[in-house]
Length: 344
Image (cartoon, rainbow, N blue to C red; front, side):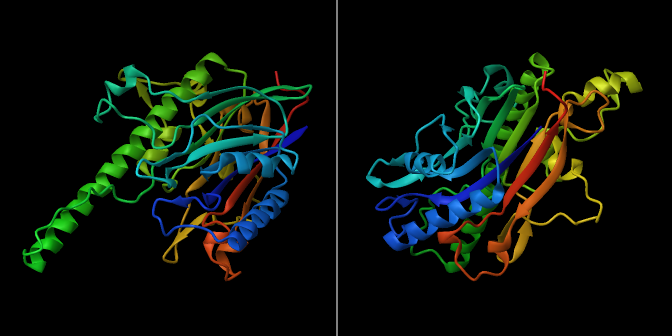
């Protein structure tokens, strides 16, 4: 049997009259209707059984929308936040998961005290968007543990600057650039810490549920060779433990605690180059990923399944001349997982 899973950043899914971040960011009724219809069309094209969503503000509306398409199981783990001074302005979205198969448990990913003692961030650190951990039962086969994540963006976290209007322009520019420089590092530290905490959670699942497939669906807001993605996947080869080289048999244990990129595992006989999932000022980046555990790695002799296909839906990013607002500024990523007779 096989299942298809995907990740879908909706781009500010906020039903009018709600706005996002600023009072001027809103949809007209016509734009909102157009956006919802486009999302439905994309979901039908994805042909998925499970989808992880990002940038969800109006979660009840999304729940109704996906139910119409056969996704009768839908979960979030937190509530979108609105501005305390303007309750019609959303300032914090959530992630969501929708499934055609039963979701038998769902939990927020928590930040353990033990790991926070090792990461140089504030004691009150928390995820910018809390990831979802959901166990989904595949009828007649078994369980799969899904994670849905949306890591902190690359936008610099710059606090409001209180510049003296009488200062020289040169001084104002210098202060602004210095603040932006620090803001980039603050965002990187947040995203990196989120990746490390998420890996800590996923690796614990891999340790305690060795035979259960794990799949991560996410907009991770960084490229495939970045430090946060390395922190999340542990792709780099581990050569020694406590100064002692690891032999081939021991290396097999290491593989069980890594995450694998569906793009790398899927058959690619044509040698297709990896395409961007997001564009900013015409510069393409890969931000959206599907990662799987070693039991879904076809190179693993004891695999329970394998990634048989990887697909990117990106036509809307290239040539339809319709603004992102009524569609999305991200491509949708879909992976097909082909299982052996049963998932144990």
